[in-house]
Length: 496
Image (cartoon, one colour):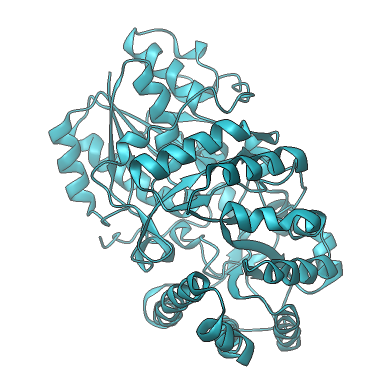
């Protein structure tokens, strides 16, 4: 079959303001097994160039695929775009089958299929095996009920088949890196880059995150095989930067250490960035030198908040002491730390904002990323806050960079102005300025300069968006009412 994979354009700040793009790992991951099974597969990365929807439809018509598969790492905030694009494609190519997958479709397949007849099927959960069986069933006109892990419409309504089994061996299917041809994917200051994955899943119970529910179980790739693949990407394709998509790659200390050692043996001049738990950095204190030797230059650490009681409520399973210790250990090994901090878990007052700033100053991270609590319906956190009021019901802005939950004590304009002030203080404090201009590692100075330049553009963009572009609900509604359609997503033009 002729299959077209579409990575739709996304309005998220990371897609539009960074000036750099990473390849869509999810789509490339399902492409590998499809190609190896004999299907003709093409990638249309419309997010790469912010391609207008009309152009995507035109290009799809030119390619005449049998199947269109869409997915996006933006998930919730990307779904309205996928909905609109699927309707436009279907109106032009009525015979093409449109299949969507990802985190949001996995949990909202019933709503998607009921509300959008242009989407024919939804892949639920991991896609590599499921799309193989689905493509085979469609090609040979077999019963879709035999394909586990999908949902589709029947005359009786939406039908979900049995859940697909998790993929125990992550090395069973390959990533179709060859589909990157024609796209200049870069990161970390216009260096050739890819997204890579050592593991899937996370064993920790953080109630605001749905990763443990989506992936079901933590698994990792064979350390040596992944190191070999990265060597191929570096030496044959010229990849310099590897951005790890893992939720928690270092869960298994022995396997993670074996991976670092396998990379070190390759003697590659590469840059590694990713996310990690602070307590695992503390756990690995004795061999943190392997992290740096393997190529790691930055880790994102989820700090989330300053109130220990609040951290217990969201089941963060960490501690402030370990967070601070992890940042100190990373700095001692010349690895940058980026602290993510989330507002909105509680009903913040100005004193809470002040305490948040004090904690961030005490932690002294190299970089920060300030986010907003986003109550995705598939997370346990949603059930805890479904009675709360929201100020934003347009899913395009459910991207952690826009306030969703109402704070009774502070107006939205006070929240964003305070957040922006905290960012200025953190980025212009003497320690941050000294490291940016005088850090002994030239590559880290360049990395901080690159990130700071993006940060300045984002800072201005967010304020302009808040005051002049993004519409909020005039009368806040209750979050749980969205389930029954009482809070309609805005019906405005997408403005592409």
